[in-house]
Image 1 (cartoon, rainbow, N blue to C red):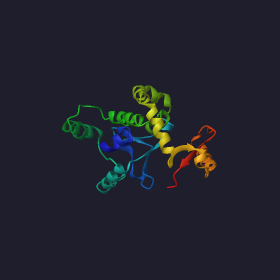
Image 2 (tube, rainbow, N blue to C red):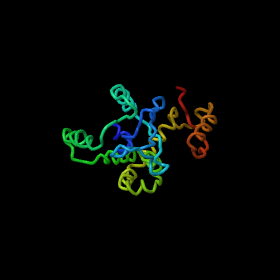
Image 3 (cartoon, helix red, strand yellow):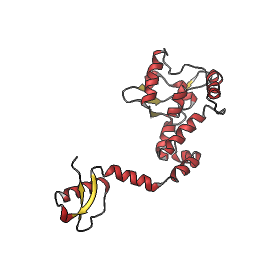
Image 4 (cartoon, rainbow, N blue to C red):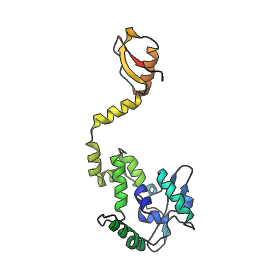
Length: 207
């Protein structure tokens, strides 16, 4: 349950309302479409955006498969919220030497990690079930500010490194004319490189 909360960013009520039939094992994702109140009643998300697919990591999928064998019934987590908070959540934080935080803070952690990884506000909003990305940006403005302050030059360099796979040097066209125009056409199609300087071509390795 703790792993599920931190790896999906769902609300506690949404986690308690998730059923095994909502889980698509083949595509490693789960459909969030209901929540369970503290009294056990099921309800629909407040907005259409609340109904959403969330991708699951291989580690979480593996944990859920083991959890399925030990959990009969329709629900992934047939637990009482108050009991979970008092008997599992807070004791786990204490044993780990962490400060006392809310269950809902797992959702904030998930969102902050997505932003730190470079995921934009629109996609973060979609994962969290926010109807307006503006809400997401407002709530996590501090996280976006930290993300945007990272070294953009390094990000750009890494992107270009991946895009030019196989192209290891720029050489004078007089030293090698083989397939120069074809190489340049491929580069233009992939990354929109500016028109080449006259007298130069791009040399690419064949492996």
